[in-house]
Structure formats: structure tokens, C-alpha cells
Length: 181
Image 1 (spheres, rainbow, N blue to C red):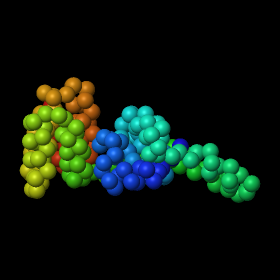
Image 2: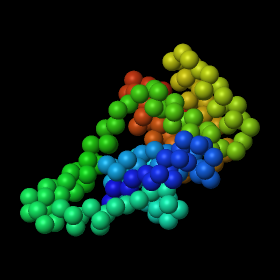
Image 3: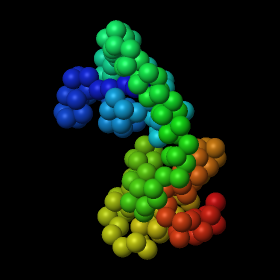
Image 4: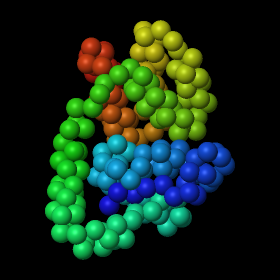
């Protein structure tokens, strides 16, 4: 299944007034009709399938899984083309393991994590990280965020954030973050 945005979703993304949280907005942005549920789960985590179901029920996403298949059925050449297209997305999740690493991606990820925390220290660190321009300053703020999170959230959540941050950071910076617990 490859969910795609409906007109309601496009309007909600443009208006910024829809009753959607940040994770739902990210999911809507990523649902382009090309990504499968497995792809979305790899990008957003294990809660992605449940969020897709919620957004389909709310009318923000459409699945279009059965309607598109019967139309090319009379043409025998279209069926074999559709069948190999399904295994390709299944093979694709093996490649996202080696995602493109960048300091910008790591920064955006941590900004999102800090934004979800309802704590004044997290809000202050969010502003500091947002305003940081020099590479060393950004790295320092990222380390501060990793040190702040255990006081605000559970240990398991902190470990997942740390692991995902290490996946996004350029390799030359990972050693400095491996020491931060």
C-alpha cells in the first residue's frame, strides 16, 4: 500500500490550522504515493502504520490499493509490470540503513525532538540550537540536548534518540557523541 495525500491533506499542510500534530504533518509530507508503509516505518518509526490508518480514517490520506489494480487487468502486459514493482519497495528498505549523513539532518532531527518536549529547558535549548551557526556550536548544542533528555524522558526513549542521531551524524562526529551517555 502506498498512501497519498488527499486534497484535504494538501489544504491542511498549507493552512497550518488543521488539528494535526508534528508527527502527523511529517507523515503527510512523506506520503507521496511512491513510499510504502515499510518505507514510512523506516523513516518515522513503528508508529507510522497506526498513524496512516488514523489519517486515512480522517480523510487526509487515500490508499488507492484496489481501484488502480483492476483497470490495467485487461492488458496482460500491465500485470507483470505491476507484480515486479511490488518487490522493489520491499528491497528498498535494505538501502536506507546507509542513509545520507549530514549535520543538517542531525540538527533538524534534534530540533524536532526538543520541540516535542514540554519543558522550559528544552525550549531554551531548541532556540540555542536553532540559532547556532558554526559547526562546533551546533555539535555542542546537540551534545547538550543528549545530556538534557534523560532528565525529561525515559531511558529507552533517550537511547532511541541517541541511536537515530548517530545514524544521521557524519561519521567524523560520531566518536564525540558515542561518549555522551
